[in-house]
Image (tube, rainbow, N blue to C red):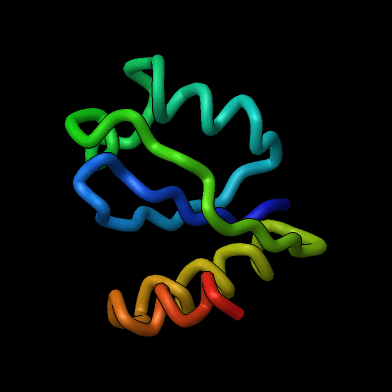
Length: 79
């Protein structure tokens, strides 16, 4: 499982999880299957990835990241 953050064209950040990072990034940029949030903020650029052993661990990490402020997320990206 992958935890990822993409930067949208409006400079906002979107966090998600997937088993196929390249497919998911393509969906965010080119498909109606992309998240509703990113559909109006295309194109998106991958700026962060992490891995997890299973969906549960990935979801926990995603939740941790989503609870961060924008400044906290930006600091994570610089680390």
